[in-house]
Length: 342
Image 1: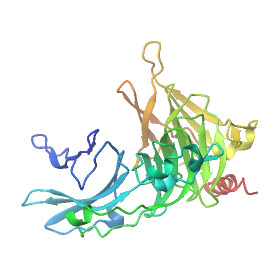
Image 2: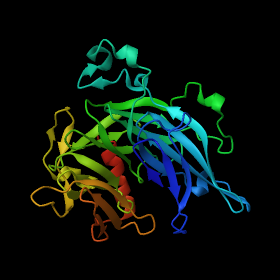
Image 3: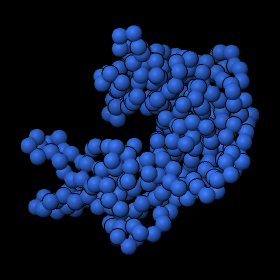
Image 4: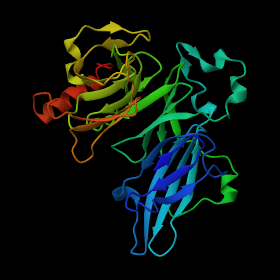
């Protein structure tokens, strides 16, 4: 699957070298109008239906035009494949209008903000909850972190041109945080349904309890901006990040009491808890920023990392473990998430 700068969505297959393009949807009224920043396949076991004649695959795309679009890809055995639009959601200025930026409310920052409340907000990052198909957290290019409820559509009910002409609903439930700079990445812990991580054009990694709507702490990375963030899929308390200096760092949240704490610029407690570091090859005298990384779904100790130089590195993180039983680690993680209210 390809996401690009003009809002076009293209799907490819690797099984056919001569005719690899399966389907495409260009920049049309019913599709994206600007850059597609995120594409997510909806797991087959949750929502997808199959028939002996037609195979369906479902996906969701997120764009700089503020649109969240649900697609139905129909792969036919005896006829051409079709990529159909199912439903469109849209994020606008009113979804983060009342959120605070460094102690001031957005309504006070600019007298013209109210006039812009219906303008779309660019979605820079998005992450579905690993615990619920309806849980969704969004980061915007204007600094908003929004918790949304994804209303799973009827994948067989395709949207008509008439429906595309109307205003699109917003899935946003509430604003979790508001910053004065873009959000680079968001991450959701697979071991705790209320723990999320946020990083952007500001120092450190900010961890939140979305149930309490409170910031737990800021992790001081000392590596500049963080462009990508992932919770470990095999260690409950481990969090990995990739920085602008080309360093991949693992943090152990269960050992947060091991280092000195201080308040960061937001007033939240800041904790330095590095566990392990990998430094990528630099470009001559310059750092080689890490822009993306992903744990392997089958072998969860494998971590693939993509950098600015165009290289892909795969690390075996099986040796990065913390001692103790899984139940003890989960208890420590629970205590960490609830540490603000305690």
